[in-house]
Image (cartoon, rainbow, N blue to C red; front, side, top):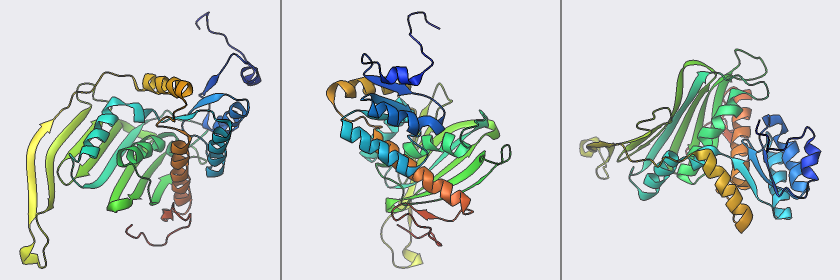
Length: 303
């Protein structure tokens, strides 16, 4: 412990300290809503770890409180501030990949086993927030299956499917019980595939200039042709930035300027909505859940 850092054992001391303009809340997820609400009501700016809350109604209330108080509410979606993920976003926006077909992510390891939330709430928010950021869109529907092997209360392995506008699919595999540690995200498009491996210190990002798409419209099988692209494999330069440092810098900047951070309360709310639908789908044995109207879809339809 650094001797210059003041500590306390009562959270209320922080709320009543007029010298404190902002609080960073990094506690078990079950306490995010309660402590963030207290902090906003005390007139503090808040940076809270993901997820913003564990229920959509609670997240909506926090966003409303921040707007009413004029305070900055930011959520720790750290991967939105990762330079490799931002490089992926740049390529998606510039059309390097062509038409996006689907995205897939794997986030697996042996633990760390948490006792406050499931592996679904612990790991999947990372990848869904990345998907939403890269596309600039929210999923229309989700379906998911999960199993609890270590603790009957919490799933420790799950497979998530998300349907986005423009017929884009997203797939996420998360696990606390897999000895193969993975932190990977891939986007597959008609012109290229981009692959992010957060554990590869030398080549975190690689672009495969290979893709397949229809050459031209066709009316019969005889006219059906495919255009195959086979190009280079590129490893773009990634700036050596610390994502958590970027989060903190943006938090301070937004407090000073009044601007909204990229991972603001609304961004956190959208993630909680998706996660709530995922949890509902798991409880229903994988039945699709429509995020727009909040009802279960018996058949997964194209957007």
